[in-house]
Length: 147
Image 1 (cartoon, rainbow, N blue to C red):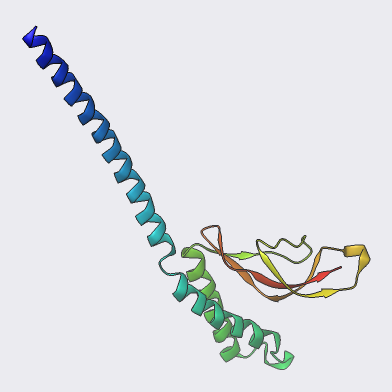
Image 2: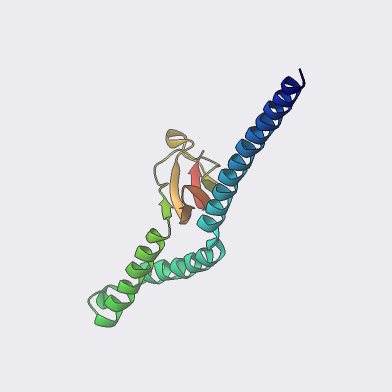
């Protein structure tokens, strides 16, 4: 009778230990996932600053006079743009494609609505590029939308 009491206590302690062990392993797994997510997005501020620089390169490229397109210095500057794009891609950055697509407030920010009933709800001009970091929007695309 007395041995049965101890066996019952032993089984109870063993079950409690197993439950706590499973709880601890779940906690460890969840904590590892949280740390992984933190590391994945830790450079977001730095990347946003680089994107601002990239915006200025795009503006300069659009205003490039035709007679300078073959200039070696200009080619070098555009090569730097490509290096920045490669670097950002390796960091998990992806450009949000928007021209000709339906407006989606999850990815786009409408800065102007333009009358065009045949293309209502369609993005007709990109003002500023938007970007995703590992699939998460870090900067929505600023766009003009037909209404």
